[in-house]
Length: 223
Image (tube, rainbow, N blue to C red; front, side):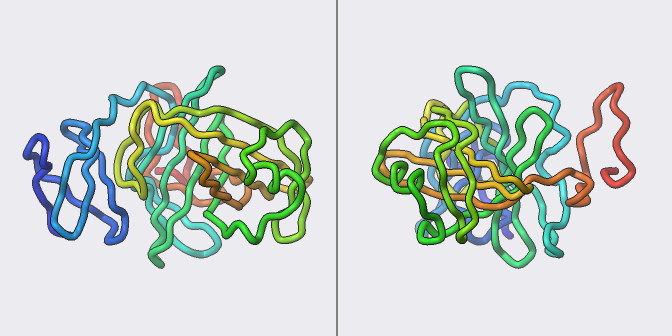
């Protein structure tokens, strides 16, 4: 897509997606929003802290037979640590998320709330607090609460479907099943979103274009 000038620093920036409204300027970290009238700076991200993730912007792969590229990231923090949510753009125009925490990866897509049911779903939608092992069902298959956090955005990069301002906080809940299927839920200002998918390994998704680290040999599939 044609490049434009960042409204804050004037550097050239471009959008890979025709649909996503926000991009973090790689030069000044301004949160740049695209509207029908042009680009505007709507906030400021922060410098991402160093981590040892093998994923980076530009990493590519394939899931369920559909190719994707990593085009964005949100770094979330909570009282005991932090994790990455990488935004995937698929060649069919859809998007997904690759959550990464402590070396584990969870690939999900947003799903309609009417596909989720059970006591934990009702409680979360009402704004109530959940507890470990509370039950929830996705498409009729049961899972239980495995992790509950109050998460805060640390920084972001690339293109995103929303404005990820540092300090923005959400309620985040992960659910687990007896299989590799997984479900997560987020709540912010009363708005609830559900994301369903499964745990994956980088080899499963054929990740290519991984970051290189001293002392870590890039796997054959990741070069």
